Length: 114
Length: 112
Image (cartoon, rainbow over all chains, first blue to last red; front, side, top):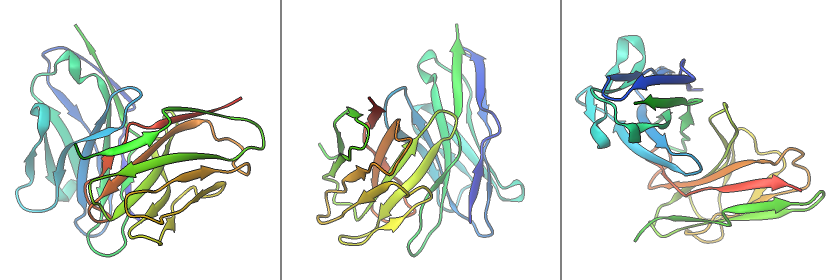
């Protein structure tokens, strides 16, 4: 079964600083990979996705992520963080074909300080 | 606007009571999901459904039941057998299972 690991439970960055959130997955084939963001008390919103092709994917709100097959990673990055980026971020992995579910990581809570 | 509507936003359950959480989507998606979210545990899958009249247990189905009689509706019942129901419940849908999921705003369930 596929699994997703987000090693950082909580990250604090200064506004304007760069950000990298880590995500590692475990699965034999190339999965579908996602990053979602959740504001407090709300549902999740998709930031970006990787299905195939270019390993550097661009998302909404200035986020990007890079798929590295050799490291089984799909880290999320942003060059300059804004206070409004404070939220919880979830990495997720899905599989193509058939009756498949998506597995979510445990999330990384981002705090942005002025 | 297309989207997923969960109701109610807040729900309270008394001891021994069954409660039903509503989830409706007008995205014409085939697949629908229910997740439970507890602090520090991410999202855990309760049930999912790929088509009408078919659904599968997820990782934590005990104490929960679902139905999928219509494409747009996927209600979740939290039964009295679920001894620790206090959590944030999220419903989602996707065109196909394993694909991008669209989420509702959630229902927060508490025990009186």
